[in-house]
Image (cartoon, rainbow, N blue to C red; front, side, top):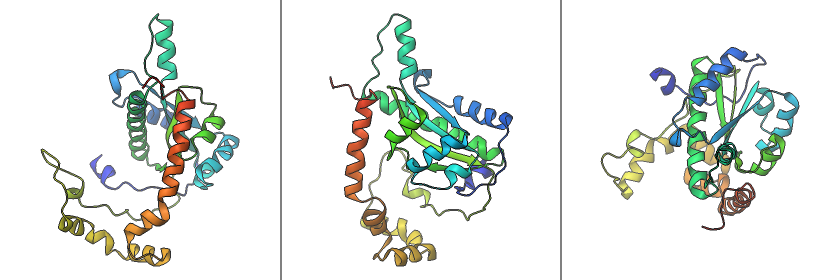
Length: 250
């Protein structure tokens, strides 16, 4: 298991081989066994194998081919809908239509997603998280028929790999791990922690291709620009309110 975790790779190209129901069910059982808030399981997993529905999801994920090529697409959602209905049937009033429970449900959905990914890799499958999910949540809600109280958090494609990429670089553990209390970073710390990453040939090529001075500028000026961040933030907040997660009493 440790070897599996330390050698994780995101797979973006898949074979046509189907994932058996037996393996898929084990993956889903692993997801459901994940830790969650109060054992309430305020999340849902939408399993998409139907090619027609995957084609409809494709534009929502910026037309990334792996969405239609991978045999299985899993959409993990924050879901207060089911729990709310149960509470109402048991003669009590739910109070989960707020930011706190969006946060809790998002954590729960993410834990379930990671459990599913680890299980999938255990069975020799490849996986890839799609960061496009929250950018186009409204389209995904429409395609998957998500009711009020349900909002997509993340999407995972999985299947048998048709490619074996190199391991992606990571910052050293001291860049993200703090013992006992948070130790803020000095200028020297930042230089040291990012030195290896910035000196990679892959990084140098990225800088050349993007016509920037350094790697940081690729993130701020090319990939995740302020204007885009603000636009998608505003759009997502509208969707959250529409889906019943932003109680106006707050």
